[in-house]
Each structure stands twice: as C-alpha cells, then as structure tokens.
Image 1 (spheres, rainbow, N blue to C red):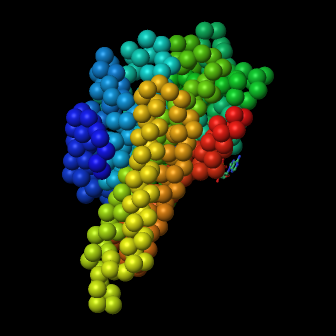
Image 2 (image 1 turned 135 degrees about the vertical axis):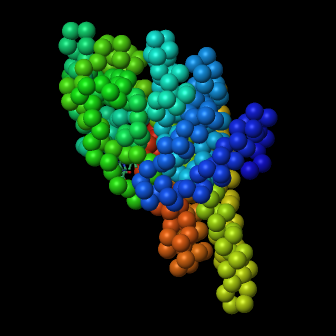
Image 3 (image 1 turned 90 degrees about the vertical axis):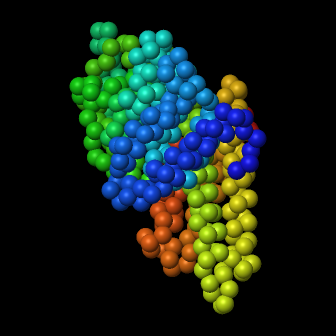
Length: 381
Ligand SMILES: Cc1cc2nc3c(=O)[nH]c(=O)nc-3n(C[C@H](O)[C@H](O)[C@H](O)COP(=O)(O)OP(=O)(O)OC[C@H]3O[C@@H](n4cnc5c(N)ncnc54)[C@H](O)[C@@H]3O)c2cc1C
C-alpha cells in the first residue's frame, strides 16, 4: 500500500500491521472456531490505544480521524475480520455519535472509558421486523416523571455480549411519522431490565459477539437522551455514514488477505508441469482482484477524508461500502477458486475469508440499500 500518508498515519499503520500479524493472524482461525475473541487480544488493543483512536485527546484518546481508523481497520481485518468489526463498531457506531451529539456530561462520563477500552460500545437499531426499513422500529421509550422507560427487543447487536454501553434507538413519539418520532439513548449494560438474549451463531465473523438485547422496563434518567428528543433517526443515519466507511475498510482488509493468499498459492501449486500462476486465466483473476482492491481503498479513503473535513459523505460512504464489499466477495470467491479443492477445506484460511467476506454486503445497510442511498443523492429525492 503506497498512499501518501504522513508520518503519524504511517506509524499508526505500521503499528497496527505489526500487531495484527503477531497477535491476530495466528489466532484468527481459533477465534472463528471458538466463536469468541480471546480477552487478552482486546486488552492488547486497548494498550495500543486502538479503542480510543478517534476519541479526542482531552478524553484520553488519540484524537485521530476516520482516515486513521480506515487505515487501522484495513490492517486488523486483513488478519481477523471478527476483531475488525468489534473495533469498527466501538469506534464508529458508539464513540462517534457521543462525540458528535453528546452533552459535555455524557462526553466526560463515557469517552474516557471508551478510549481506554474499559468499556466496549454497541449500537442497537435493528429489530426483528425492522432491518433495512430501520425507521419502522417498535421499541418504545415512554416518559415517566423525569425518566424514560424503554421496552423492546433489539437483534443482531455486534459486541452485544461484551459491551459496557449501548446506544439504543427507541420511539418517543408514536404519533409522528416513522423517522421523526425516534430518539437515541445511552444505556449502560448493568441497567436493570437490560439483558443479553440469544447469541447468534453465524456463517462468518464467528469470533465477533452478535446477540439479542432485551429491554424490559429499562428506566433511564432524562440525562441518558443522546442529542434532541425525536431526532434520533438522524443520529442513527449520520452514524452509519461513518460505520459504512468502517465496513468498506473491513472489506479492503479481507480482500487484501484474499489476494495475498491467492498470489502465494499461484506461485506454489503446480499443474501441467508449471505453477498455476503461469496460466493467463489465473493471472487475470489476480489482476482484477488487485485493481478492485486499489479502487476500493481509494473510495474508502476519499469518504473518510470528507468525513474528517466535516463534509457530507453520505453518497461517498455508500459508494465505498458498495464497491469495497462487492469487491471483497469477488476476491474471496476468486481466491477460493484459485485454491481449487484445497480452498474448500478448512486446511487453508481462505474458506474463513470466503465466509467473513459475505457479511460486508449485509450489515450497516445491505448492498441494495447502498444503491438506494447513492441514487437518492444523485436524484435529490
Ligand atoms: C452479523 C450481523 C451483525 C449486525 N450488527 C448490527 C448492529 O451492531 N446493530 C444493528 O442495529 N444492526 C446490526 N445488524 C443488522 C443489519 O444491519 C441488518 O441485518 C441489515 O440492515 C439488513 O436487514 P435485514 O437483515 O432485516 O434484511 P431485510 O431488510 O429483511 O432485507 C432482506 C433483503 O431484501 C433487500 N431489500 C430490503 N429492502 C429493499 C429495498 N427497498 N430495495 C431493494 N432491496 C431491498 C435487502 O437488500 C436484502 O437483500 C447486523 C446484522 C448481522 C447479520
């Protein structure tokens, strides 16, 4: 990767690459099989400051931006996508909305804990009957004196089983049209009435924790409201612009791992008296993989830079996620094909890459939804 990074970014990239190769790569298959990440890995990431990468220095973070996060996530995901999504969600789906929309008190209370990794973050938007149509959510937050009382069930919550703090989206105005009556709340994991439900066994990113979160008469003080009442859906969508840059970065990391594995195998495996890398059909696959990865990275860096500059990146984040995620799946498919039968066994980690790549086209807005976001911007509708 030869982008023109400044000294600080180059240092962060090299540090995260070294960590990923030493601590994650040797254990990624283990995390996949045991369906969890070893806690000492999360502790080491905390020591390196990765949980506080985008949190301002005054709250104990590194004060870096989305570009730095993208660079780090590409390195982490190249080694282990389960660890990658854990870090991405923490930084972009919880740290970011508190930074952008939190009160001074909320920032002071939560950002230092998030920065140190003492508290992992999670994002609760999706419900059993509201996925792509997120504004149809049914969880309610009803005012009771000075408090809010929340009831509902959230599904597919990344980091659900390990989080110390959740941002929960709930309906505060049942009379308002779908998106207008939703608010965001900061809910600590030890709040009475909040429980972790079913752990989802998944096709890929199996090491990452994905659970139901059940909210049964969860009583919160008014100070838990994040941003303005009934403006929560805007917070959810703004947050997802950053989150999609994270998933685009994840896609780049997985795709890079696929290319590296495919090149290595093409140089080793012999058929018809020569290594398979000599066959043009294999060379063309490698060329297309490499070109798609470079383009994915550029789109991702462009969206990250726009967000760092405070510009709208709604279309660009969707474009980065759309292109990078479909490219990751293309690369994973071609990588497996280049490995032939060996790629279809768990002797090689390419079958894990193939499974891990699949989710990038589904979460934080499925591929079809990215196309809708892009078209809406083009058509101004
Ligand atoms: C592993 C994992 C982790 C996740 N983590 C989180 C998390 O941390 N927090 C959270 O809140 N959510 C999370 N999600 C939820 C995720 O964001 C949703 O799964 C995703 O938005 C799609 O929703 P759905 O699964 O209900 O699919 P549906 O919305 O039911 O979509 C099914 C299919 O229909 C298509 N479709 C739907 N609407 C349209 C349309 N208008 N036009 C064209 N096609 C359409 C979709 O593209 C998709 O192919 C996670 C999901 C998974 C699988």
